[in-house]
Amino acid sequence: MYLATLPSESEIEERLAKLKGMDPSKYTAPPIQVFRPSEKLTSVEQASNLITQITEEVVLDSRRIKPEDEIATRLARLRDEPPPPPKFEEFNIPPSLVAGSSEEMSMNEEYINFHDEAKNLSELACKEVKELNTNADYKKLLSSMQQEKGAESENEEAEADKLVEKLLATQLSQDDIEEMDGVNDLDTEKSKNQESMDEELPWCVICSEDARIRCFGCEGDLYCMRCFKECHDSLDIKDHKTCPYLPPKVPVL
Image (cartoon, rainbow, N blue to C red; front, side, top):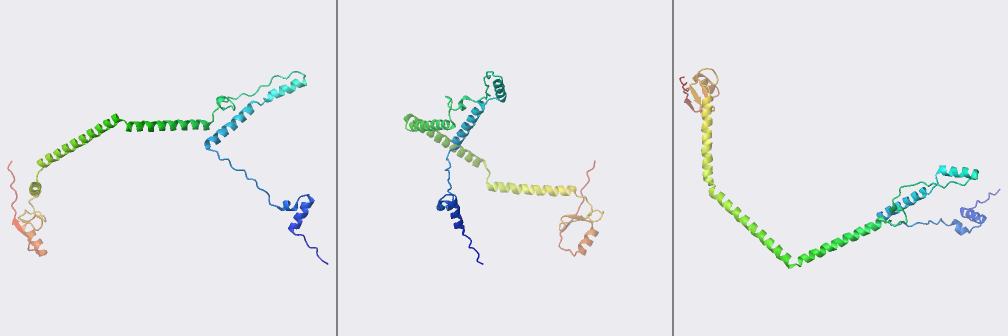
């Protein structure tokens, strides 16, 4: 038993082409793709085309007969009466948007007119600037204004120099300032010492006994003799300078 050989794909396509009465080469050819080139329109042109399309659709809708008028026409025909005049739907369409009207002007034309007007204004301005640059009176006026401006700046600089010289003449020397600072510091220190002496109490800083000695090594603290000796001996301090302390006299009221 022998198996029949199956036909190939190309043989099947050739048989199908013959059955359809077509050329096998055209039948097996790939489909032809037709590309429509895209229209290169500006945004202004696209907007204008869209407005025109919408306007035409609105005009077509306005010419459509109303449903009730269509029913009335059919009834009149059944009664063998003359049909009533049709009433069309009315739309408020601006005259400038109706195709073929005298007021029709596309946005592209308006843009072109605006561009031309701006170009004319720019050329006119350039022409006027050139005329001013070549005008002798204008040059003379400009030169005089520049000279006046230069004279004013020179006067301002001279006044500034005079003011600086005046300040320098009245200013104290650096040595005088340092000397005054030293005197002020000395006066401040004396006043602080005087205030501290006025505010301190005439008692020992450790106990409540009357103070008898001032220790400069302990920042001027006041001690009685017993506390001073015990404190300094316990810490083995022998180099502190001291002086006897005399309590201030209480003024008699």
